[in-house]
Amino acid sequence: MVFHAISSDFQRVLKLSPSMVSSMYNRSTVEAILDEEMPILNIIDKNEYVDLLKSHIPYYFSQVYFMQDDPLVIRTIEFINRNEIAKNIWENLTLQDAIDYNPKENRLVHFKISGISVPMYFSRETLQKNSRFEIIEYQPKGNFLKILSKLI
Image (tube, rainbow, N blue to C red; front, side, top):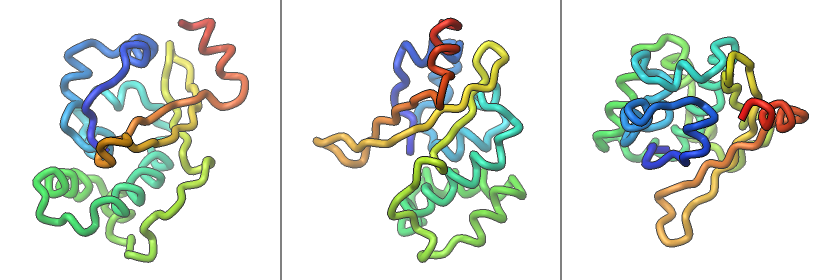
């Protein structure tokens, strides 16, 4: 939910400079997706942007709906309210929409790698010693692993 580290291999594949990476730290994933000044928008396929919002905002809601006084949540909601699509998604969520399980088809992000849109499924795993933190793992969809290995 909040960027604290990005693996060096992932940085290399996405061609993220150290300054790009440091600008994402201590920001929620939703904020990073919505902030037009963030470098993440340069590596996301803009044709899939709305689907990305539809998959991330409900998950974020399910994790923070009870934390309305948290400074990070307040800042993220400010970014949500600046984007009409995100605001519409957020305003229509209810406690019944809180995600218990997020199916694989909803966990797809399209990264731009060397100008090619590469669809990757992601999965989240909480750290055993501190469940507040998650590791997010990306796996290319279908044959993109072969294509991706040629680009690397």
